[in-house]
Image (tube, rainbow, N blue to C red; front, side, top):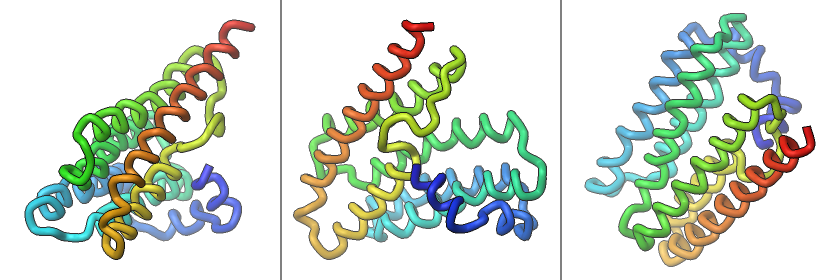
Length: 186
């Protein structure tokens, strides 16, 4: 939803036409930045928001470049979605040790279940884009804001991650039920 609303305000495809890099290269760079940040955050104390911001921007640009330059492909779309799951895990890893590991695990399961419900639903012929909340852009934005808040208010990290876990779990269940209902009445 976040990226859909942003596209209405800013013509990202026009911006994408001007970027001389391959969309697949941007996708790979997004994942590398996300995972390259994990040791820098956990060992050296770098701010996680920096890596979430750069990785998220690269991830948003890959599709804009592909559409804007007319090189969108099914392979590129698959690579983007596939590597997004790895980036999702990296973003949660930035907060390792600041919340119970079980919470991090449940957050990751909910995050993946949201994406899986869309993937499987669309494979079965159900349009799922825009169904529910906490889609990829919203999740990245939320974790970015948690990382920014952590810089000024470290005690907020744990409650905000518990909230994230509750939100992605509720969103996954909502989307899963919505797909199930649509398939049950076909």
